[in-house]
Structure formats: C-alpha cells, structure tokens
Image (cartoon, rainbow, N blue to C red; front, top):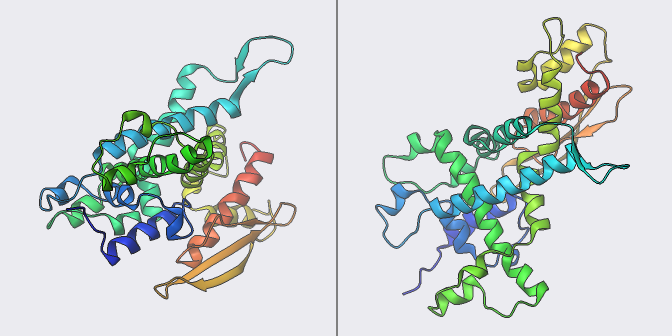
Length: 305
C-alpha cells in the first residue's frame, strides 16, 4: 500500500519548499515525498519502517552543491584571456579548494539550517530531538538532502521541457515501476542554482571572505564584526567614518500561523540603500541582514578599513 501524506506532512513539505524558494504553491512541487524524505533522519526510520531516511538524498545534494559552488567560483575568479586562448585564473587550486570547503562544509550548512529554522521540520526518533536538531552534522546533512530533493524534483519540469520520453519518479512510484538511473540525472539547473544561491548567499560570502583577507592588526573592522554587522556599522559611525545608519521597515505581514514577518532596509549616506534578502520573523534579524549588505559595500570600496 502506497504511503499517503498526512495534512501535517503536506504542510511541512510546502513550508520548507517555500523557505528554500523552490516553490510558491503546492502545484510547484511534483514529488512531495522527496521533501518529506529529506526531512527524515535515520533515527526516525528505525522506529517507523514505512518511511525512508535522507542519507542518499544528502549524498546526491552534496554533489549538486559542490558542482554549483565550483561553477560559481570559476565564473567569478577565472575565464578565457582576451589576448590568449588559455583559461586564466586569479587563484591557484588550493585557494579554490579552501573557498569551496568553507561554503559547503557541514558547519556552514548548519548555520544556514539554523538561519531558516529548518531543524523545526526535522523528523527524528523519540529522545533524539534535542541532540539531533542541534547537531552541525545532522543540520548540514539536512540542507544537503533538501538540495538533493529539489534537484530530483526539478527533473520533472526539465524532462517536460526537453521532451524526454520517460515517465517521472512520482508516476513510477504509484505504478510500481523501478525508475532507471537516467531519470535522476537531468535537472533544471537554473531553478536549482536559484535555490542554492539564495541559501548560501554566495556572492556576499565571497565578498566577506575577500574582506577578511585584508584585515590586519590596525583594521577597525575585525573578523568577529562580520557576525554583528549592525555593531560594525555603529563602530564606523562613532569613529566618524560614516553617517549614522538608518533602518526602516519596508513591509510587515503575517504568515499562515499568524507569526509576524519583517522586511527592512539600511541606509548609510553615500552608499546605496540595501534591503534584507527576504522576510524575517524578528525585526532585528531583518535589520542585521540589510546592514551586512551595506557593510560589504563599504568594505568593497575601502579594503582593509
């Protein structure tokens, strides 16, 4: 008998797909079982034998993630020379490896999971909730699995656009057919790039990584200031380097559970006004996100400040 999603499971799947920016409505998801599986830890399947854990999705998502980051780094820091046929790069292999590792490591992915409260949707075994939802390894694996779920689910639209003649994973599941491996490979890379790029906020990460390299003992902005961008801007203001940052509420609304959502901007005279990249459940988080964008702009124009 086929597994039937409960209303609560459907709600969780849609919430997570919306958080990731993968879907706006239920109809945007072709195979919701993939997302439920991505949310499921082995400790849960040890107690519920009709469910499947997220380990293989995490394996696949990790490869999709690395491919995205590799392309993103090469697009930014290398290319064919204007007067030479060679592929030229700003960095050597070790530098690329270091940047890639910082982006895709489990601890960074866990920060993303906490940032979006993805651990709230994790399905774990009884007695494992506190330990597993606070684990960098578990939360990092969750992000990888969700990327894997998005990638596989996107193959449906991709196959449709490319007029591939084979059926989909969802159709095969309900017709008891065994899906060939070729069905898993083609993905809608533009759609998945949008999801990963939003989650990693990769361009700002690289701006931050570059600016950290300019820090020296006399720098006003220290590495720890990147974790408190509002405080960093205030430090620059009190030293008379910039005008006072002004924070404004752009939008305030509520989600389906009547929780407040905030969207804010940050303005520093002489620099472009920046908005937070989405809605936040706390106004301070929205302000901090906008402030970090302004801080990166200031540091890009004043390396080593």
